[in-house]
Image (tube, rainbow, N blue to C red; front, side):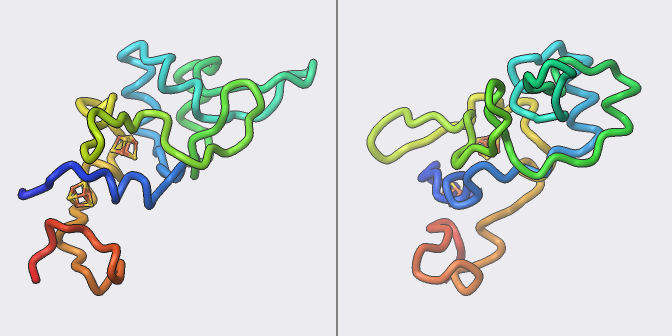
Length: 127
Ligand code: SF4
Ligand code: SF4
């Protein structure tokens, strides 16, 4: 598709990602603790943040779907996706593109059209 990598859709969604069980299990199998650490999973008895990187496969299966990326230390929801990388003044890329969440992979922003997003809509949308 004619995506120009402006990064608008990822910036618009900020920290929201709706990681679901298949995403969590895939990252677990792939050893992607660097991704799983951004998914909060409650608190440890000592009050420190527990993340999906600390969970076993069975625990990941029973987790509620995460609705935002969270800071691995504070557990607070992030305002931006930690994997969006600005590579030049007008171009962004996804640092985890091969294994990004299904919601990112399957959302065809250009098909939603300008009406959905108003004047800030996806520039790859048909007129
Ligand atoms: S808003 Fe459209 S053109 Fe910009 S990165 Fe997203 S899909 Fe690509
Ligand atoms: S994971 Fe990748 S595709 Fe999804 S919001 Fe972040 S940068 Fe965008």
